[in-house]
Image (cartoon, rainbow over all chains, first blue to last red; front, top):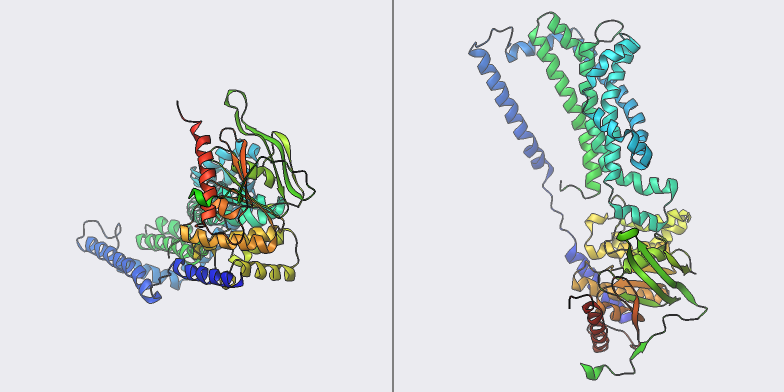
Length: 288
Length: 269
């Protein structure tokens, strides 16, 4: 028996080695190059076309300023401290609204996902709110809270919250039934069931919802900052854009737009993309 | 072929109900219906089977014989419409055709989870997991995640996890159906060894007759739509068995013929 057993173990270990999925990897400098190069080329082409349009003088220079003029405006705004103030103000406001949306939206989403009555009552309302442009809350916020920070936060929260809650609902709905069944069979009940099975199983979908909600927050914030202007408000990127418009200063306006774009992309690239990747990679959901 | 099927190794028996004190699972006149009114479906019809402590019982049958339903009911995930199921040896563990490992946990953590849920303390947990991983020859893979393993390895992790949940009754729902023949063969040896060394009671559902004779102490055949016990065989084969053993083949022929007869009743005449 002992001899047969060790022979079986030998066969088994051979099978294990043969059957293991082969891991292949590209060295990271080459991978980084493959990702970065196309982006750089696209940016260069865009700048070239822009410069070409300006050089052809199809439009007056106040309508389409040259890349150089925008660069000077950017440097000027950095010097007088507007860029630093605006970026910090907007990012802090965005983060604050996003955090509130996360704190309110997560339990709300769980409630909708797991309690049938709640789902029937407000499930479709949440989906409807996801398609409602959040800037429509700005006039209401102005009447409720006045010309202040709360109104901006209100718009951001209303923009992000349906995405967060909706993300939780679809994340829970997409948990493979077999995993829930195996949890039940193991005797996971009540809180343990959520802690060990439901919540971790829903994580990839939740992170996808968080990612989407951030872009909604950021868009809502910009819309709110453009509309809700003056008063006791701080100076954010939206206000920078609006101040450029008031002075018909196209280079400053383009500076503001490029900054808005850059912050949105950077937050996604530095926080949400790596988070999403690590969650997915750990579960073998992505090839990368 | 028939010459090998000597009558003394094959015993046709009709004793589903055994009045013995060592019964681990008693399925007593159990029926299960789904739906109501005209959509009513009788899935399991008055099934009675007693499984002894330490016994390896295989349930075989074609599609629609209610095999999985019976296992669900023994596991307590489903309730019989009539009759009763008594499990005298604690809560059974259930294994599926898919390993159903939690993809975010390592092999170690997957096997540890049932112990965590039973509030076993940390040191004892670690010890038990190490023991179980060596039982399924996976001690070298404790830190891997399920997607880094082959199908057969995942199913061995699932087996270790099931054994972490219980040492008494193991329910297996076609656990090897999705594996290739070589891997399945090795897993048969693993399971037979674990059954022999731990003395765990196993109820094993399969539509593979050969597999049921390879593994079981007893094979119980169920008819389809509704599921009823129609026959059973004790597998009295001495010594180590293999799927290729002539004795296994001989009894498999008998059982397969009976199964075909049963399936044929559902054909159009």
